[in-house]
Image (cartoon, rainbow, N blue to C red; front, side, top):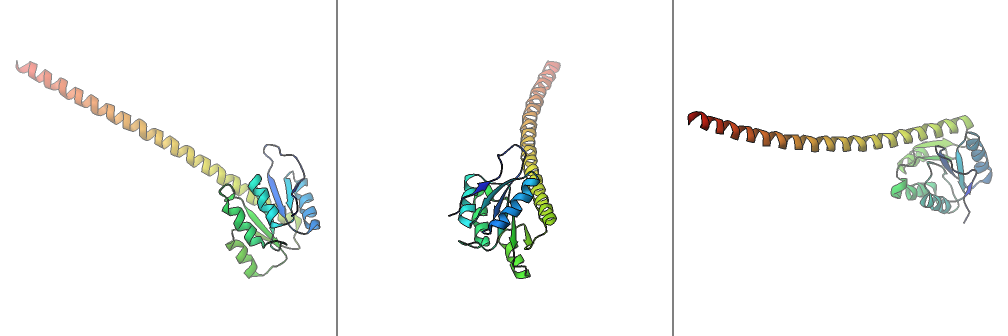
Amino acid sequence: MATTTSHAMPTPGRRRVLIVDDAPEIRAILGSLLSEEEYLVSEAADGATAVAAMVEDPLDLVLLDLSLPDMEGYEVCARIHAMQKCRSTPIIFISGHDDSRTRVRCFEAGGVDYVPKPFVAAEVLARVRHHLLLRELQRHLAERTIQLERELEDERTANAALMHDRDRLADRLGRLEAERDLNDFS
């Protein structure tokens, strides 16, 4: 089994990308390209190593070759997305198979995008940036939704307390008016 390599130490705010390809030259090219753009890059030469890396410490995005020595990229994608903490991790397939059937199967397997080999560096970077931005926006939306749900629950609790106080005051006012009416008739 191949080991995962990392090109830099994690720093807050820097996005981490896992490159999964059995070809060392592809991993080197993509690793260099992404590192130059300040991404933290990890590499895996096979599917089992990629899955293990994601179990240990989920990364922000995966660039995944379709043809790996131990399993197909489809299976790697399924195993990664089967983990609760990795369900929203964007996986971009990279493959030399550039027919519509393969692309559709990649999307059906859970991939968010597909880049044919040979790839264009600017296109890979644009797709990586795009999907990392989408993921960040989804995280922000989920966090904001949770915050708004909490605020709504707090408002409901406050409204219920106010309604209870209003009912108690209305009841008390009714008793006071009844006493006053009794005293007026006496």
